[in-house]
Length: 174
Image (cartoon, rainbow, N blue to C red; front, side):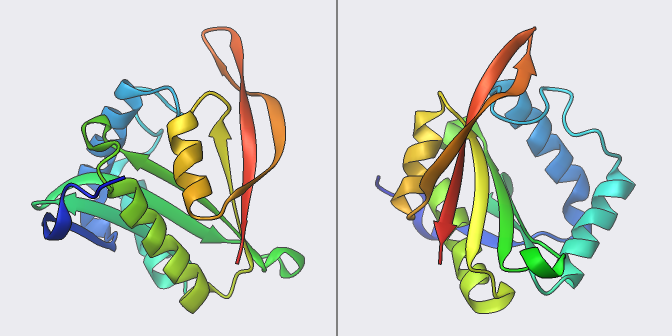
């Protein structure tokens, strides 16, 4: 996969002042794909709740929220959250979203690299987990590129328009 954007693409930590733009991004991504937990309505959160979430992520030394900006415009995001329970503190979960117009152009790769770097250098985690639709081969290829392995399947993980959608569970062992 060739990175199309080079220096025009910037990955940075999300800030509370990004909340409104982030919600708009997630609504657009939700309208373009059925891969997220929500559709075009976006996440069930207010701007104030999103601001608090981004503030909490920024203040937590083992979690991060990254945004991808192309020429200043937000085009993707990635949440990385380490587990806080003592017996699970070696694990983290992540989720990613990228505008469809940017698929296959390096945005997801740059977000993944930021998250993996954070995991290795800041979070102290040993395993990163994620779930991906069983039919989302593009995302699976991205995750495998960075060393994620399939560890199982979850039949009926989503229910969209009355139909069950299976997911693959994947881990990256750092």
